[in-house]
Image 1 (cartoon, one colour):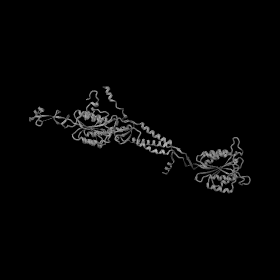
Image 2 (image 1 turned 180 degrees about the horizontal axis):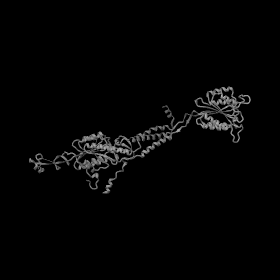
Image 3 (image 1 turned 120 degrees about the vertical axis):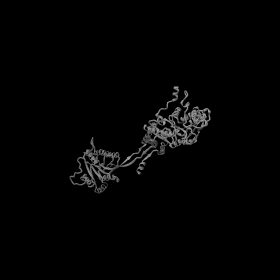
Image 4 (image 1 turned 135 degrees about the vertical axis):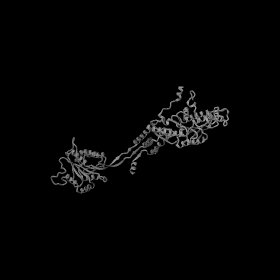
Length: 350
Length: 289
């Protein structure tokens, strides 16, 4: 019952005062547009269920036509609404490195000619990723010296793509992963329940995470428990994630390796993708896409809908029935032509 | 029967034979119950009973071994009263291929002329739920008065919701037997039919059933008709189709048959008057039935 009421509340009219004319819809019950044939005794006509049904149907058609016309000119609509549905997708918080080296190619040079910078490649591939599934939620955070909140968690994919399109602007210098991670974790809403959460870190380098900050991050990861994906855009010749440094194995000497170790120690599902070219980036993204297939509640926006067309359609339907009935009308003695004029025949014969 | 060039409905007389031997003092055209006058031979009675020397029956007197004198008796020719009882309920306003009231008017005019021409009295009672005095007429032999009353009836506008006044009419014409034409479409409730017929059972009753092809065989095969009851019973939509028409005709035939059974039980079969009044057809019906 309350659901029905809630449904009813969503309907409205542009000119609601015209709805006071609705009682006119009862007129067809009082009078019909058909020609009335005076008849001596209704009991002479045998009872007929089909005729009775037709009479009821035509009365209903008349009521429907009048009511639909009144509703049509009053301008009916259904208000827009937000519906929470469940689809397949994930909450994805993207953390994108904006350090200056992202503007170089995978070969470590300034891009020239047909070459693509790391930022441009990730922009293109991430842009495709955003469009590919309808119900994903995305948040975009950039970081260099300081983290930048680019876009909070949203399902407006156009905005997300625009935010991603902006990441190949010339970047800043330094790579401050720790604060970026903190902000990206803060992007996950508190209320999203059992949706699967993905933290996608796109960077071409790493930095030392201050041990004091490490504890805060651990606590945040433990609370939110996202699936962590690190898309490491490795420049040719630079150390990889697993490479042990030649000298002393300290975070300062091999920040990538130690960041990886830190991520592994977090206790959340974690995978690192080392990409050395645009194809590798695309493959990594496809793999992430395939992994994150969980039900997610998402909000669907329904715009306001004009219902006048429906109302007029119903009115046309009712009026058509009435017109057909009108066209089918006959007279009582239709079965035989009028009696021949005997008088004139007699005269002519005589 | 009809004059040259004259129309069948006007010039022809309705020829009727009463089924009973009428009593009465008025000399007329019908066989009476009493003896006397120039009628057909009735019987022989002893001279002492009817001392009329002009009517001596010599052959019967000679044949009598006791030598009694016999006298012939002849039937008296007497006049009867002819009454038309007309239903003025609203259903009589129906116009199909013919106009029901015009038909009733033509019938009454012809009957009035036929009755007064041979010296019979003509009376008219129009009834809806009561007796409509303005259209009624006590039995009269005046030809002009009878014709005027019949003409008045033809122009009447029936409006009543029932024909219950016919019971009062039956009471009004009680007395000596009369020839009574009951003119109606007989679309009455069955109890009223029974009551009116029993009320008139003493008379020589001829039901005249006003029918119209538009109510039965001339109905269309297909189409929509919105029927409106003339007696105010509302409207009804009917989708005509061959199967419904068959059922409708069967229903009408059944009604007519029931009316026929009832009428024959009380005397004569009903005369069906439809579209056009033909006095010759009525005469054949009256003589044959």
